[in-house]
Length: 133
Image 1 (tube, one colour):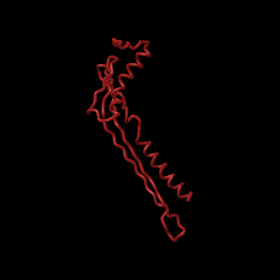
Image 2: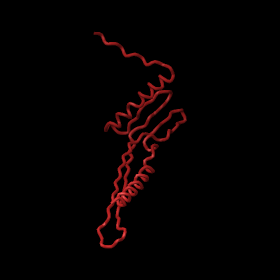
Image 3: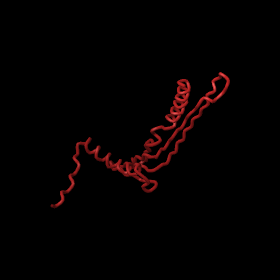
């Protein structure tokens, strides 16, 4: 039984290695594109992947190695937005309207970048006006 388990683990390991090769982080946040006017455009994509593998010893009367198994993986990539950075301003240009949580997260990236840039530059964030009681 442990030999069968080892064979399934080896099969799953090979499948995961192939998924790692395909799931390049640059597929999510692409390489920056620079325009002549100094604008930087960064493509953002949604990447979904999955894999499956399995195997078993086949019943036989012969004392041969009768292990059979298989594995597979699939990846989908969908461009969702572009981060446009010009003169210190960051904008998100969406390709499609909000579809889910990932899109909302992409929208918050410019705000986070602005806040971090302000902290790094030593600027304080303007305080929100206090509400009258």
